[in-house]
Image (cartoon, rainbow over all chains, first blue to last red; front, side, top):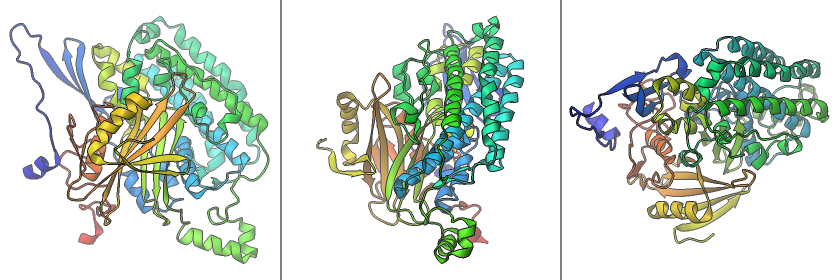
Length: 411
Length: 149
């Protein structure tokens, strides 16, 4: 075993341990996690402390590694959609969307406007869902317990909407290659309309709860600074980078799924601390509500699946009356559809930042390789830079402001 | 774009791919970052083309964002590596963010990155044997493989 370990751990430089002389301050190594409540999952951080100041922090990930990329290679193209849900379990529809967009790019099929708008609307609902969970748990970490209950009240509404659309509260798999999984349910306009009319006032409510709380402000303002250059260098994306003043949002810079037809602003701040990240996400919730309202009012009529009989399952009625439809149905169900050879890299803006799938096809009915560039992985990498020099109590606030999901990190 | 390290260029699905000489990857990345403005590294990954030879492809996804955040450009670099020499220089000196991505590629494919500051497994346990994303590695792993029964 020792030989195997030597072989697999290629080069580990010896840690530079300074001699602890009489004048050297005593350092302590503290192991935080993997079952620490504020790490929101199974993240282990090794902290080296000098008194209460963090000298060095090293995240240790992989506790939630489930080999999703390997499993994708075994499933056929459409089946792999259900695995993408499990990557980031708070923003399932963003993951469904990026995978579907990547494969549709390879297949070169056109998605009808109604499906595109529906995708945008539901992706924004999942952004609200993710930000609500983030806000509730982040405030809970810092000690403001009541916000959690308010946020989860609205989250419940969103989960009901997902259930109404797809039959599932979390693992929706509603966005499929070629369109949507099911026809939008009857009366969805009423349910979404009722929710979205009330939602902006709920955001004001959270804002009042937190911004009138001096403890919240003292715990978050000026904490968790990390320079914009460091963020770009380390691969940080999403609300973190927007809170540092860079107005980069993939929905604007590389519009996908008709995001260019929607009118919304990119929320930015310049303070670059935990508080500004909170403000950015709060503003994003308002912008998402705007997008959902526009989608609700301007939803185009028409089909919700692409006109691609070799990819999309035929209508039940057609399958029973037309021979071609029956043949396509048989082919799609038994072996799945084939995707032409090629490789694409598709990025979308998930609630946490840039989520990008690199999909390689070798012309068969299974993906040859699916690489998931997940935002939490990139963001978490910058944690040592962010925590250096912070107080240990502030590390909880700083960690929370990153909004990582360990399923997203470890895949 | 021309650079002595670029062997060939493919344009497909609106994306540009450069096939790059593995020996000059660091030099090319430094050039792309400093002179062409690719200020971000989006991801590093690999593809295993077993049993074809050269077996591995290390894939770099570069990204450039303007300071107004509105215009962005993407570029893909690919380096082919053979099965008996799965080694390439690390680009952590160009983008520090390459650190974890290269560790992940090492963990999953067994490709070694020279001059990497801390090349150890990142997702799998440190004493894990084998490289899970290689095509000759069974989906259920060796330990739980049904073939043994």
